Image (cartoon, rainbow, N blue to C red; front, side, top):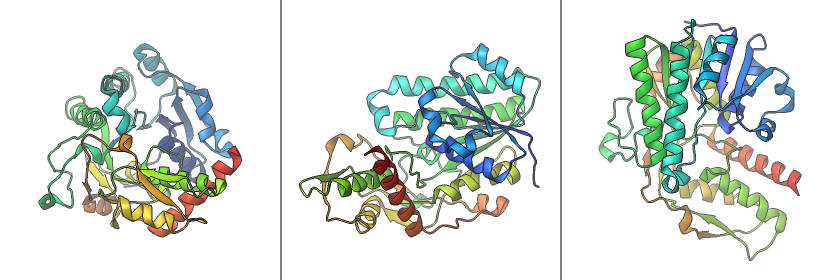
Length: 328
């Protein structure tokens, strides 16, 4: 199985994940027409200038169902990645109504707009490992059949997207594949702990002020990580080779703690860095075990991570240094 596509639509194309996916597909498949839904003009710069010319940007609030229907029928994509979501886990504890309301409405609007259209595209519903939530050690590594136990309003909103997609596949026969991505190194998204660490290190290096601290939350959470390029390659392969109706865990096999990531990044710093806990970063409930069983995805797509964690952390820190140097 090796599907081919003519028109690809990415919702949330100016988000950190969507922008990387757009760049990846643009570089890999220059014959595909790329369309991207976005809301904020300023965020278009998230995508490299060279790739922007290959993308048709469409400004739309996905809450507007009628406008969404018109656009879907106009562009008629044969591949859709649904990445649009408010993905700030920590903020979801403070603003649960806003985040839950946004994430569920934009998803049902999208699926209904597709259902009312005369097209039947392949839909990649980009869910998350957060839907598993709190998992017992006896259930590690986590399989796709693991019971849900979401530990944040954000996770609950993504579980709604996940379950809704399963319903639309079963009842309305939409061609849907669900991915549950585990942690990956995303240099653009500073509200992820690993990116926040790298961002703070790069800023402290610029100041070279020994009185400043790097602030962190819980360091005991256990995770696996994949590089951003490996993650985007996985998203592309699931569209090309994944089985319709399947749910796939996607994740790495190198197990580390959040504290281990912090220690590793600090070891790469050009200055001595002190750390301090920031209580505002502590979640009321935290997901402490996120180790995937991704054998089904490996088997169906032949995907394997290529980048080692050491290389990903080097790239992450160098990216944040470059960004912050430009802002100086």
